[in-house]
Image (cartoon, rainbow, N blue to C red; front, side):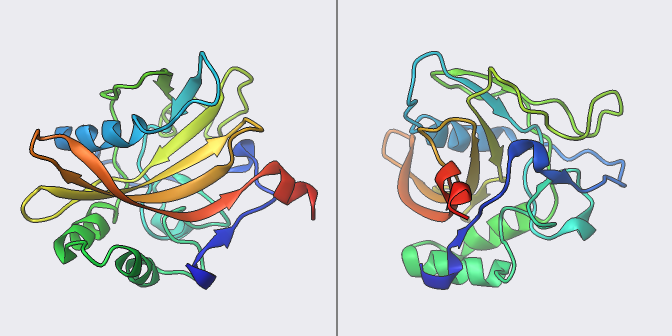
Length: 217
């Protein structure tokens, strides 16, 4: 993946900044997207028993702080594309890794992630999970505080489908509290099989960092 891969260091979950929301309209993730989310989450192999996971209640969106979406930012920009990368460079990266990917899948993904959307708890996992506090709720803290009982947090993009609705892609960021599990972001490509089940066909790790990266600086 060359220069497009980014190693992120010196970042903790409690240091994530949020852009400020200024729009009142509420966009929600569509029901069909949860089947894709669940197919990806089903492939997370817990490094321990009795896993506790938080899921951020809003999806990522392309852009930097100017988007003002109340979503997690790293260095002022979305996890979907760190500078100097752009959506166009991410598209180039994914097409080089997945030459079979439909153009309509990427087009839909980019359009879906122009704005952030709210997630409901329609996830089915083998481990304990819950949605994190709503960052748009004025009664809650707008920064995520470290929770000793949480093993990692998931931050999700919206799902992009091709025109035939048999191919899908999304991005998943896993922010780990565990020494055995690195923080990282991955793009996934999935297709429906003959049993109408979503199956992962490709995975591209976009960024990663661990405690060791930070300690070595």
